[in-house]
Image 1 (tube, helix red, strand yellow):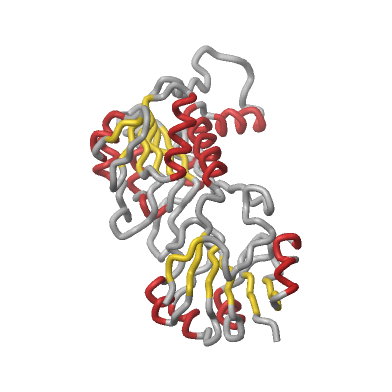
Image 2: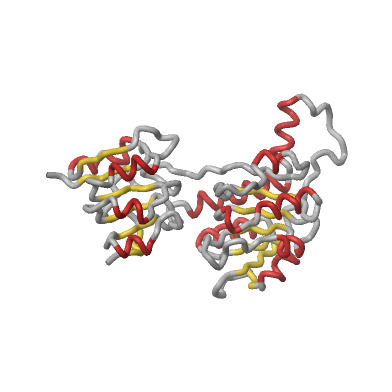
Length: 313
């Protein structure tokens, strides 16, 4: 009898074809949305492996319902969606997929920075709506990127890749990280100094208890009124209400984000609120490359071996 793998979102056939030789593959039917939690709980009652997405909350309730589960393979670099303590308790290995999206994420980070600085989203909407009539000297002027100062909070693999792109634009690159790195032409700065001196602040740190709410009203008040905040890390790192107020009151010039914190019953500004606050703020959910067999997860990857294990017996 083959071991059972449950995949929480439909993946391309080529991504799972080889698995079917050795495993019984069960998979959610939709490639746009992930399986709801109740369906995951139902499926893990028999599954030996769970191939999860970042949108799945894999917690004690899931592990408790899974007597045969040996491994959770998370299709993401981040893993804050998985309760590691519960995984250890139940003797389940957890893996993630480091490095596979480093360059893709850095590309999108810099694209978001450029879109914010040069008001690309606003300009596109102006043309499509018919509001744009003709060229004007200061129309959609935006902010200069070449030669500006780029401050990176969280200098991991993606941070280094973003720094290289910034250097290609002749930017002066600062970074803040838990540990200092030995990097060429990149200067370490304390967080407050980075915020005060950067024209573009890019957040790339993981979401932990230490970084939750790291950027709030006080930190935003340190930034230049001509600066932009670019968040491509987890939404909970930035106090969204404080950011909304900073944009609305013009304490900072603009902002872009690929992440928002999920609702917990609190009333917070939505993406449409940001879009309507009359500041350069292309706040929208960004995608990433997920080309299987290329810069995504290779088709031959086995969920029992997929990625890097960081939680096991």
